[in-house]
Amino acid sequence: MKNPRVAIHNRTGSFSEQWRDYCDQQGIDYTMVDCCRTDIMSQLRSFDALLFHWHHEIPQNTLIARHVIWAAETAGLEVFPNIATCWSYDDKLSQKYLLEAIGAPLVPTHAFFDRQVAIDWIEHTSFPKVFKLRKGAGARNVRLVRTRKEARSLVSRAFGSGFRPVAGHARDAIGKLRSKESRRRVDLWGKLRRLPQSLMNIYQSNKFLGRERGYVYFQDFVPDNSYDTRITVIGDRAFGFTRNVRENDFRASGSGSIDYDFGRIDPECVRVAFEAARKLSAQSTAFDFVCNTKGQPKIVEISYCYQAEAVHRCQGHWDSRLEWHEGQVWPQDAILRDLLEKAADKLD
Image 1: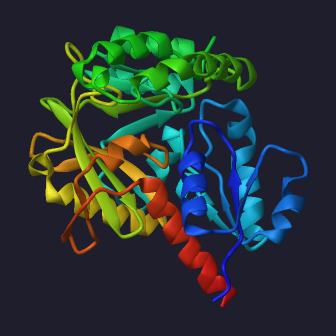
Image 2: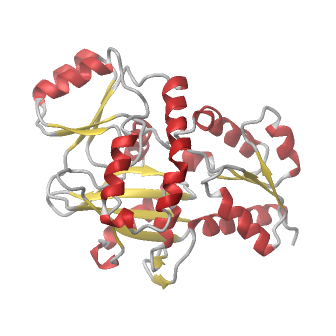
Image 3: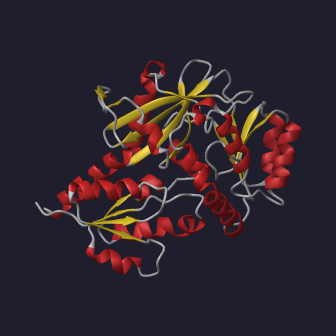
């Protein structure tokens, strides 16, 4: 069997570091590349697979990643993430229509692209609602709207001055650092060391990507959830944990308070996540669930990006038959093994 040649986009703090180490340990032929170079396509001609763990807070990645990935797939490479996996990344509008298209149990979501239509809807809907920008992770750019007056104010801003695409990082970071779970994290000092670069990325994103305007996005508020459920599907593996809601808040995403007791996880969340991932043809996706008043799991949003360490701490995973497999797995290793298998099959 011919071994595939692998190109890995080199980015500090990304999955690329684990991929490089895995390739070194397993004797896999790889080269670190820069997917933001103008000559990247000519470089990729000698490769069989591309790994490009791009991030929404790096403006160069946001501008170029989907183009390079689609071009590489067109050239015949096996790519992670492929377009099916990352097309809706950091774009809740895309997720709304995509999840509705496959019949996934999405929390009822409402998007408007006309100011007056939005105002008319506000006058006839119930509150509270959850307002979101299409961009943002860790519950940033998310707020609870309790009254029509608040909603009308947000609509006026959305169709006026707009919003910065990346906001509130410092406030969220302080909140996470204060949490007991975050203080116990081994990587805490690593996160602090990376903070200056993170702040620079945010500054550049807000400078280069323009303001968010011309639409409004609301989700129904689902009450009485003390935690949400994160199910991360990688191929035929599903990893699960729950995240406790922040103190004096309604948000669990970004709380840093993770519980790995899989007894808290509704198996229906796992089943739905596998089914949605299959319909989306996604290589790896994290699904966030809350339960409605009937106890039914509903998807809040999805992302191909997630904290690898949080997934690795799971003590096992389910397969698509919902059978449990004991043992920790690095998600980067699982992703790379799946990609290598597909690339090798293509070479036979």
